[in-house]
Image 1 (cartoon, helix red, strand yellow):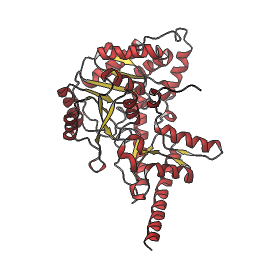
Image 2 (cartoon, one colour; image 1 turned 120 degrees about the vertical axis):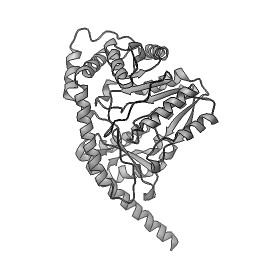
Image 3 (cartoon, one colour; image 1 turned 45 degrees about the vertical axis):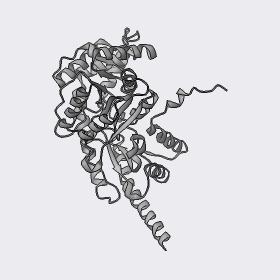
Image 4 (cartoon, helix red, strand yellow; image 1 turned 90 degrees about the vertical axis):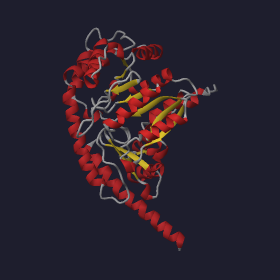
Length: 400
């Protein structure tokens, strides 16, 4: 039997897919499971996007190679959107088309050498830690604390940079997955300014940038050290398109295109051309529809969860998640999630995959089937109370 390389051990799957696989095994035995673990918006896909994709696949020119940097029409539309958002003259050469998950690994490989460090929030999207370690880099965390609304502290970030001269990249998602929080304009301006001052790259994952509820934050001034990562997976409700981008310094963007060329030549042309047509014509309507749906679900879910004395949370103002502190139940996140799945047939995502602070948190997603969402949240409140009571009885028995 052939032996795997040492490097292969650094390839690890995203943790939410592990508990999803466990849930699917239960379903295979005939037990229905309520899914709240995966950030999948595909149940809310716009029929117009589906129509455009069917139409594009029938065109005779849809099955040739695309440029490794992406279809020019799609790059041009994204450059125009970013220019409008940031007041900076982004052009086609500032944009490369690549799946957003891949973009994280690509940028880290291009901006860091093995042994360098990457500064990131705790908690943050699980791919960050996995990509950092795969590239032979060291993660350095700065805390996001529930008691202050999970807002980054610029002074603490500055201190982290002072303490580790090997930090080459600050990587942050805004809005945040798993928190469902959009950070303030002042915080994001402070991060962009600090990174420019220190000469390190700010990689800003904006996958949920169009899913912000209430007052829209002002975009920070663009700096040459900032790179934006975006995907149509969530706000276009089309994760299977794998249509994402990196926007930033043309020299780095060109190397991402080379990376694409080396590993998979190009993304499928019909998907890119469909994405371009959709962004041009129908996208804003879909974003508005999705925002209204998720805002309504946040209102309903917080009403279900708020009365529980066993969980706490910061009400989301963005994205499609709620991050729940379950420490008062007496269970850690892995135990809570596994027992909840096997005892109540509801699947939630343990917080441990999002950073060291996630030991007593679980993430739930708001974008699945609406009836399952409310039933799952109701079951979670009941489960939290029951395990807390169970632990209290055990503690009393120990005293006696």
